[in-house]
Length: 210
Image 1 (cartoon, rainbow, N blue to C red):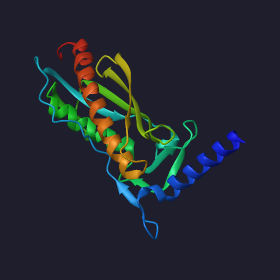
Image 2 (image 1 turned 180 degrees about the vertical axis):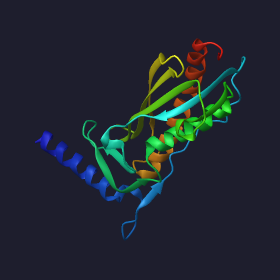
Image 3 (image 1 turned 135 degrees about the vertical axis):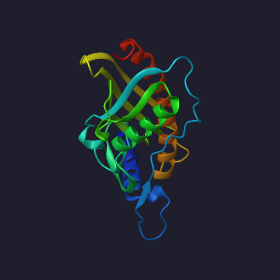
């Protein structure tokens, strides 16, 4: 009986999230579009000498579940579902790459930072791949969980300089699309700070440009 009641409760929670009941929608359902932001503090330039290398950023292929603008939640901690009326303004993989570019430009650790699709000639290639981004509604309080992988390659010698995974879970103020987006933005801010430090330290292994 307890197990049956728990399944029923989880099913009700999943239905509420998917239908937007918890998204603060009154009356007719409303589709909400949320921006994935870098909510971290303004980062000063990294200390130490700047690398004379140009860093290019490329996008890896995320899992199919996250290769969309639809927000994802988990009602039981193991399954994944889409919000019915909660959407990102753009696909998280694209936004993550754009935000990483802005953060790395701000850090001034490289002589230049640009997207690999820009046509700029680069020395190092940093590939980012979104691994997961969802609202864990089974946690108490609900949490935004973000994970992505990074791979840094010396573009000239085609040698791998380093590979690292970044992951973080932060509590959401409320178990809805708005609370999820806010917590996700804070997680992005923290992890992009870690990514910037790692990319600068790992890129230094390549030495000066020829």
